[in-house]
Length: 312
Image 1 (cartoon, rainbow, N blue to C red):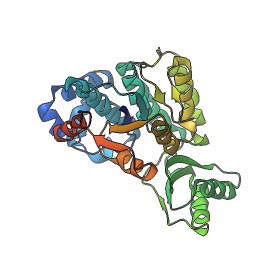
Image 2 (image 1 turned 135 degrees about the vertical axis):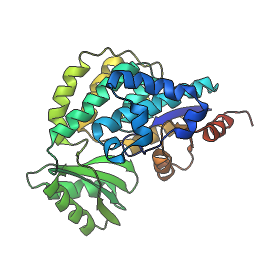
Image 3 (image 1 turned 135 degrees about the horizontal axis):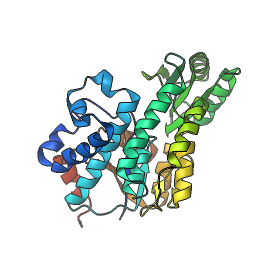
């Protein structure tokens, strides 16, 4: 039976995350201590005590979620779990996937995602960027609505999360126009998201230039497990391609629906959401109900996931 690990991105964080796991698994505190040494502050304390406003700052959220995912990935093997056949990560989660694939060193990844968060926040001044979720509309209709609403500004479909669930991003005025255009085309819901950084659109190209300089200084290795990358939904192991696509991801759409379909097309039957929350499990149900998705963020969930691999 083929399996995959899928790693969540921003939005899966919460104050107190992994507190139950840490009571049983020393690997949680060990991994967070590694990240804290890099960051220069106590990341675990911040994740446990907050405040939420600080944890939700992009440059803090990104290292926190990366570290949580890597800690759970390590614990899976401590518990005797088998190695998966594929890896995939949603947006920020792709960095976690590359660490799991042994393409990117964990310490280097922590440095990169902290920088990524800082550059994303600086790329568009507060109040000038916006994202919105569009529900109940075909992908092509959302793309057409954005093109219609642009009028010289930036707005684009940036997260193809599941059938009928697309996120758009761009400048405030253009996103507002696109919201109205989507409603006019029959969207069931078109609602702004509580974020200030318009991720995965052309407004991030300046951030990508600076991030590219940092990536050039980091060693990437060929992946020991194929990674389904966001920008093309293709399985990749070549280090140069992984690196190039990782940079392009910052200003390109996340093709998550196609990524999950790539997994299913490669006979993956079981996926494990390696991180906090159940966002990706929810999306998977909308994409292909034949894919079983398990969480592993606490001992009970991990036991259930391990049982899925036992001979029936």
